[in-house]
Image 1 (cartoon, helix red, strand yellow):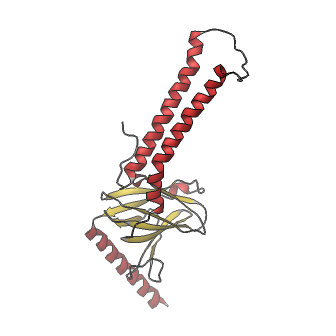
Image 2 (tube, helix red, strand yellow):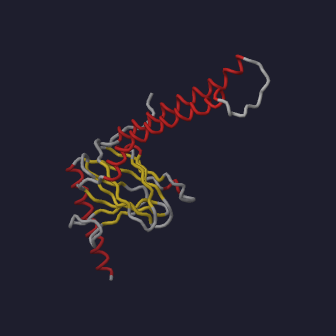
Image 3 (cartoon, rainbow, N blue to C red):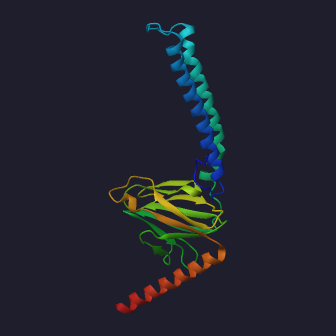
Length: 232
């Protein structure tokens, strides 16, 4: 049975494994709880009685499940520590550095200009409804995530990528996509009346297609600048 969407991220399988581990522990706890509740119904038909819980025969039914749950939590924490440390704290050298800005109600994509540096005067801003964020395949993509107004959350399910965008803060995240294609970018924060319009796309391309896209983007931006100058 397929539980998760396709994975095209280098670290997606580690996150899926964490979900499976949690699912296993929760399923076992659920089954034991249901069985423990149903057995007395069919085994005995005695009147309910109040127990103070100060005797070991009663207390063990509290201590034993609590101990098992604590052990499960420690196993999950031990497993996830290395995964989150590598994904959240160890930002790799960027092959491509881009920006994503959440606003009401769209995702704004910021590409570095021809100086190949983000946050400089020649950055190119794409603010169009349902537009595409273009990235090359098998490269480290480092993203500066910001929000212009209310809280948003950048969510790309196939990358197992999710990060809240907070006004006043710049949060750096990264991913490496392993498969070319077109995938959804969503906002998983209920950010207002037109929240559902925040549906953009991630276009993962091979190196040549990505360079062609950038070249066309620079050319369009240059033409736009020239038309603005001539209109003054």
